Structure formats: structure tokens, C-alpha cells
Amino acid sequence: MSNMEEMDEIVTVWPDFAPDFVCKADKCRHSCCRGWEIDIDAATAAWYLTLDGEIGEELRQNIVQAEDGTYSFRLTPEERCPFLRADGLCRLILTLDEDALCEICTMHPRFFVMCGQAELAGFGLACEKAVELLFASKNPLTFLVEGRPEARMEFPSLLLYLGLPSAVPAFEPELCPEKIHAVLQLMRQTEPIDEIWTSHMTSLISTEAKVLQCAQTYVKQFCQADFDRLQTYILYRQLGQSERFDFDQLLTYTRVNAMYIFLETAVTGDFHESVRRWSEQIEYSEENTDFLLCRAAL
Image (cartoon, rainbow, N blue to C red):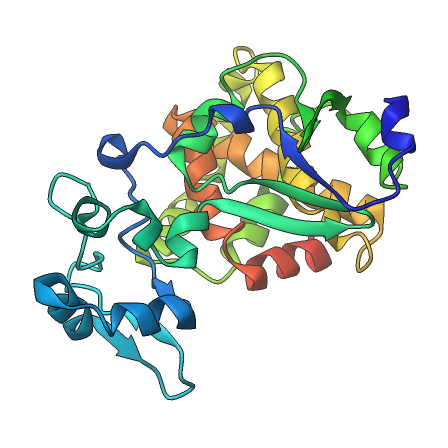
């Protein structure tokens, strides 16, 4: 939009579904309060350690300080936050209030990356609510400028504003055996998030002929609009890397990851979970993201 061209200060950009984001809390099947290390910022840790009463004592028993001085919660043997109730609700919020949360708990699953004069904000797709909202619409993904409701942009306009090429091809599955093999091999080489990922990749690679058959069936029924929105969002999250990688590398990274999610969905039949699980493995690992950005030249 033309009014974007007049902006010379730093602006914050959000995907169009951002105003609808609300944590699912106890309705979430994949709580961000388990399975992850939960760091505590220094200011919040200092406050936690001075609280009185039963909750203060429990906090002091469940905060760990590392050798480098950083703090984190002591996870349970099941890798759950000690303050996550069995019903999926947070005891810190219920006992104190939402303002009592540390920075990472307050901000997750939001991300913020700088690209030129814009701060690009959004939600990581390891969050099932973010996945649901991304695909709630079949229209092309658009973007909002924080504080300027009139400045809604289509993706090509945002790219032009950022000084990047605006042509982004629509998603197109590549179903030849060589391409499928290359995509699966790249994913296999990423650092695994857990043993389940390793086992699953081994299974996919050992049955590539079956994966191809599933993909050939799925290509007749997949939703083009969903995968176009997915590609847009994968690329959007990596635009902050445009100073390190040229735009063609970003496009290739986007295509490879979208193609992997296509194959995964073809095999499992669960598009949303394929996106969410991919995000845990790739988006939330700088090591894996960098690896694919450097190597995904199919």
C-alpha cells in the first residue's frame, strides 16, 4: 500500500490472524509447558526468590541457577513445568496472576525479527492455536501494521516495502523420486528433537516408494490455498535472514520445508499436526534452520 512507502520509522508487522490469537490453555493437546526447557529472566527470578508464603517456598524449590548465572524451572521427571496442573492450567496464574509469568512464558509462542525498517512479528507454528488460525482462512495471507489498522498489505507489497523481490511462486508439489529422496535426506540430517523424530525419518526413508504413492494420491485432493498460506508464512518468518542469504536461498528453504510437510501430510493424513511437528523440529532450532538455509539447494 502506498501509505507504507511513507513510513520512515520502524514499524511492527503482524500476520492478519494475530488479533484472534488467544492461548488455548487447558484445551491445548501440546502444551508449551512441557517438553521444553523453561528459562526465567533475571528480573522475574529475583522477584520469585523473594516471595513469601507457600507459593514463594515452592518457587525457590523449583528454580535452578546454572553456572553461567541463568535461571530456569526444575522440570518434573515427565519434563513438565512444576507449576503446570494436571488439567493444563498454570498454578502461577491462578495463584498470583498472569503478570507473574516470566518473559518467555508471557511471550511464547510469539517471535520478533528485524528486517530493514520493520519488526516482523508472528507466532511459532509449534503452537497448535497458531496453526489453526493460519489455516482458518483460504484467502492469501495478508499483514497488518501495528497501530495502523488501515495499513493492511498483501505479501508482495510487504516484500517490496522491505526492498525484496516480490515474486513468490505458488506451491507446486514435486513428485519425482529424486526430489522426494533429496527432501527426506535433508530432513534426516537435521539435529533430531527427540527419538521419535529419528525413528520416523528412518521409516520414511526406508519406504520412499510408499511415500511417493501416498503423495501421488494426496496431490489430487490437497488444498492449494492452505499450502500457499503455509509457504508465505514460512518465508515471512525467515525474511530477517535476508542479509545473510539471498532471496533465492530463502525461497528454496521455503519450498523444501513446504514439500516436506506435503509428504508428511500425505503419509499421516494430518495436515495441522504435520505443520506443528515440523515447526518443533525446524523453526525452533536455529541450528536446523541454518543447516537447511545453507544446504537446501535442490
